[in-house]
Length: 277
Image (cartoon, rainbow, N blue to C red; front, top):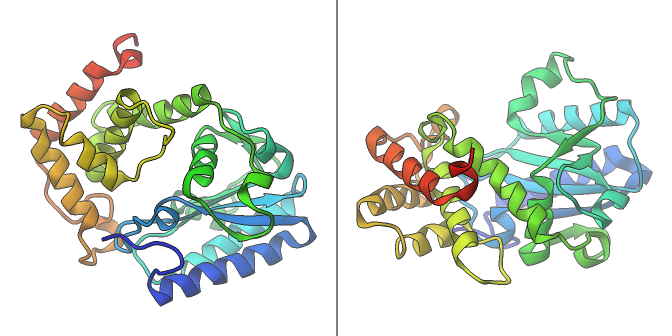
């Protein structure tokens, strides 16, 4: 079973509180609140696989030096992490949070893929950037998010329109289905594709199923030859055995290339946007 906040392992809980304390200090007087979304908020957190996902809200735009301080503090915090997964977080202004739209502007962002650029001084901290994922994160906050500090979620974040949410999910799905990307992150790609299937097929007020929930549901609707691939993805996602950081995307497993590509091709055939591209 996955873990959730605040009943997760003590070392994870301690690290999350450390993140909140240090990054709130960087934002200083501009800090409005800190919010947890993703698997730790939804109760499906697996330390060998999952990231800690957060959104910070500021009272207005950040100066370039504060953006850089935020990024460098994130790097320092990830070096102390007690898990294979890492930290992914963004800062948005209160004005942006109140009116979430596709390609929402953000003030700062951190993910492991940025570490080299941050340490090498290669990021332009004065540039304006947007992220199509943010509306999906905000919808997740409304469904199961956790307020770690600041005003309640509903008081800070506006409603996300379904069209914007679907476009955000579609941007991620397009990457999964392009070329052979599914081979790079098999269980992530398979289970996120199952989430997209959920959205296309279920008339539900819940738009953000967990990866585990979507995978189990998809077993009941996918053709029988594709179900073993979903079962493999679920097994890899749930596996509590530690894996080296370099093997995190594959779960340290060997995957059936032909089966993954057959799964990819089936999802392509179901997605109107892909058929029209």
